[in-house]
Length: 439
Image (cartoon, rainbow, N blue to C red; front, side, top):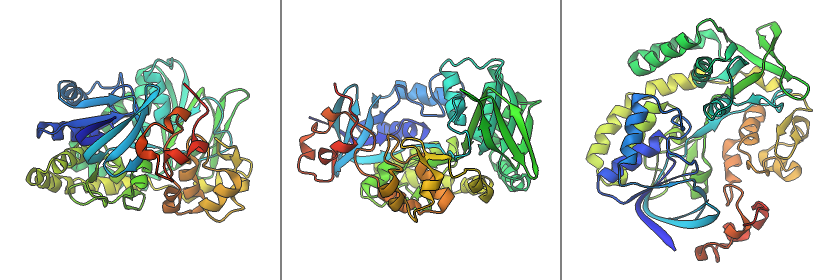
């Protein structure tokens, strides 16, 4: 049985919520599917929606006619107009006339000695765990990497009672001048930055600085930091480390959307290269919550065939792209970060593949075939982006290896849909990728 929608939105972060509400307001039957138990995505996750903007959008969603499919993960696109979702120990077919992909982004991790120690976490990951109840008061925390998420996480942890030992941004100070200038046209972002700075007042902030090693016996005890020629050790309980964001492109790639420069290519109405498919938010460019909301509205209007209103918003979007370019420039990774990992440092944590083994190969495909790098449960989401930076391997070749299912699935899911029975490259022939969990 297939549940059908005029417009189906994948991803319930700000872009997806805006797209779903805008399309529903046009009288369309809209479905919103997300693998999290509650709407809001990473930025408005449960317990974090304290801002007026978040409360407004989430309140509107709760009162809307949008069919919310929370806790469902898209695992395949077996045919045009159809997606397969798994959740609640079962599967369901989701049909659509128009599709909006708002799949968000994840943190980029770069390997260094000790990065697999317990209590070395992604900045967003530690923030999420604290919001979920992890006690952080009195704990010593180093926040490191690159991007505006660092200051946001440090501010939240500080408000929860953590002692922020250091905030380490890999970009040099000179890069922040044009970035700060771009905030002149973004007063909301500027005020947010001031609030973050107030919350972290007294913490040491370093630019051109990054972790080179994490040390400890059974868990993290200290981190070694480097800034220029200076290197020192900081005692800490947690290292929150993330090198900006990378978009979740697996589903767009599986569907055949044109991807260039690490992002889905869309026109001014957020339409992708695949007919009846739109894309909004981080998969089209990392630009923050306000841009994601705007792109979601444009995609919702365009999918609902209200092109006049979509065109008016598209003109507003063009005025925000200066901030996107400034953010991209300031978060460009320092080439010296490639030198952090040793030959013994694991790059693929799922399959325990060290850097030395990957050096023997000249491409992602070759490395994958010979070492199983990227063939574990995360399917290259961590080691793929790391390898792209470390070796200069083409991101397109990494995405070209995307196959269904997009995530490990139950064996029972493999034969769920009759529509997959004759699809040789779909889930029906992908049993080797399924998890061993059974119902």
